[in-house]
Amino acid sequence: MIERHVTFHLHPGKAGDFGSFFRSDYGLALARQAGFLGAELLQPQEGEDTLMLVLRFKDAEAAQVWRESADHKALSPRLKSLYQSSEVHVLQVLAQQPAPG
Picture 1: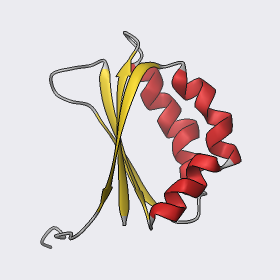
Picture 2: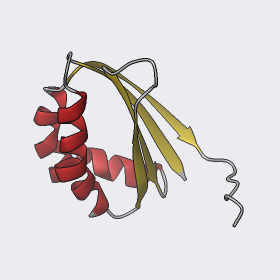
Picture 3: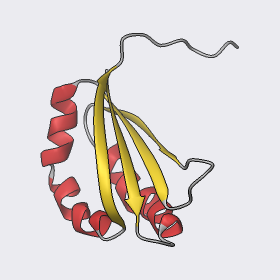
């Protein structure tokens, strides 16, 4: 499994717009993508103009297919209008511990 951790440094006051965009358009497009396993949108407690998006894919190939997809390309201009800069870290998941229960 591959995780992509993307930190977005938003334009001031855009956190709500980013969250709405993720829930309505971006997340739905991801859900249709083969090899997509899940995502979380996170906000650090100390900063409202920074968000982190954690994306999980079956493998690196599935992540690349998403990046090259028509959906991703169509949504990118709107996504880019919400942030000033971003950083991406791609990680391979070596182990997981399920929650007890």
